[in-house]
Length: 131
Image 1 (cartoon, rainbow, N blue to C red):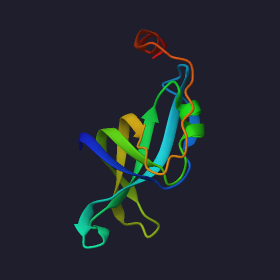
Image 2 (cartoon, helix red, strand yellow):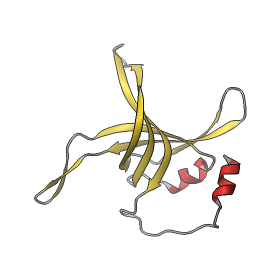
Image 3 (cartoon, rainbow, N blue to C red):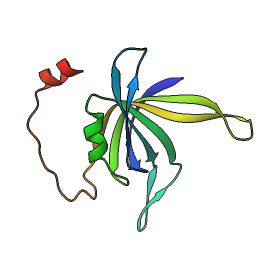
Image 4 (cartoon, rainbow, N blue to C red):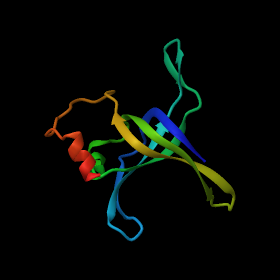
């Protein structure tokens, strides 16, 4: 089962970068992270989280290594992609389901960001050719 996903949450740890050999071909860049997708409900003094959950996020992107150095634990991110349920067996032998997001995009939201340093401009044409 899978469905489109578009939500925001907080990174639970610094992301992990991997090079993965896909179908015996060349290596592809993968960024993996754990995100807590909360459900904030307004209260008298702020917000209360009602019904949030953790999900693994996988982002196959040619610049995954660069992004793994940029993204940090606690950052607020916006994730767009496909939500997937994956079966697994827990330590007691029980069948369970885990939630994974196969991301098309992960954007940093500016909460708690202290500074931004711009790199050289890249054209969308060049990015499409590298993908």
